[in-house]
Each structure stands twice: as structure tokens, then as C-alpha cells.
Image 1: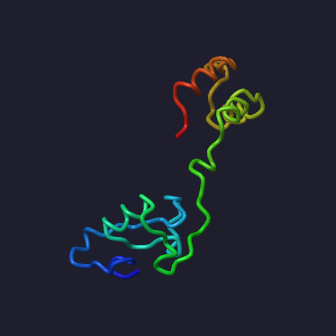
Image 2: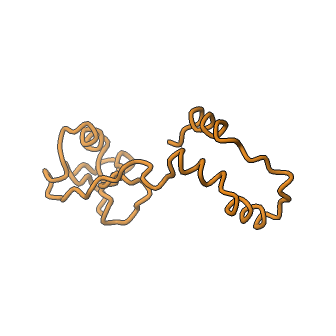
Length: 117
């Protein structure tokens, strides 16, 4: 990666350059997924003023946000699955009498109040 904007070539102030994740997965820091852009080009890319193809780059498939996070229904199922709960308690060495398993309606309320982003 060079110290200049991949689109316009700006390089006067390197601290004005930003890294863009081409597939929009902020956890994928593979060098093939990263390009360096000046603040103006980065902003305009996210506002769909231009595309990566315009500078000769292939746009990788976009990753859905939270693709790997469980749904509230999956969290409810996992939280109430007795074998899994027992395994967690055993690993943490916590007596079961200290753990209150939320009811299904309590889990739904928690999922509504504190959604996973």
C-alpha cells in the first residue's frame, strides 16, 4: 500500500488518508481487502459518487452487517438449552443454584430492549 490516495493520488498530509475495507467487513484486514483513500474520496465512495471499478478495482461481494451474530431467536434457544447451560456452568465452576435462567418472555423482552447491532 502506498502513502497516497488510490483514487486521486493525494499525499500532501498522510494523516488525512483513511483505510477503506472494500467488502465493508471492518474485521477483514487482509491487505487485498484494503485501499488507502483521502478523506474526500472515502466520503464520496460511501455516498455512491463513484465505484471501485472506476479506478480499476473489482468490488468484492459486500458482507452483510452482523452476518455472524446470532439472531434473538438463536440466543433464546442457546440460553435455555439445558445441556449447554450445564456445560458453561461446569466450565466456570459456578453452582447451578446461583444461576437464574430467564423465561422465554424475559428473553424476548431483553432482545427487544437491547438488540444486537
